[in-house]
Length: 138
Image (cartoon, rainbow, N blue to C red; front, top):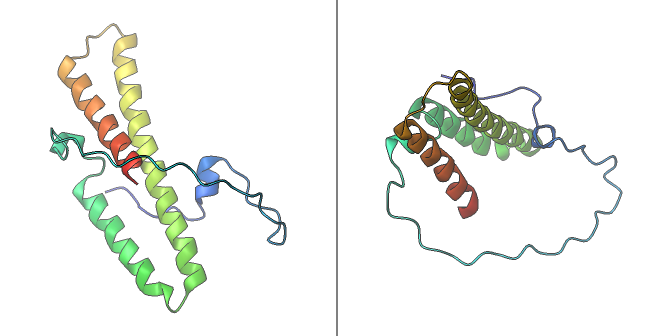
């Protein structure tokens, strides 16, 4: 199982964004993002085993860590927020690494002149679709 918690990693670092310099500077006014209209969820192959983004052990560990963070919030809200940020950043990094490894493997096969089966490509595309649809549904 992959280590879930990355010490010191933040969503800002993952995104390559510099944190604000001072808390006293006013933030620029933001316009609300237009909200997409709800759409029906696709029925086919939505939660197939091959489209899973995390293995069950990683998913369980992350869920348990999230519950611990929520439980700690009452006594240590600031630390809970930092831990939540680190957990989300670690998850995003793990997912990005998963997709990067999958693509690198396919590209290695292509560069050697190997044929990649349509089934392998279909499974890979399903993983991308599952991730994409989940991001849009948030």
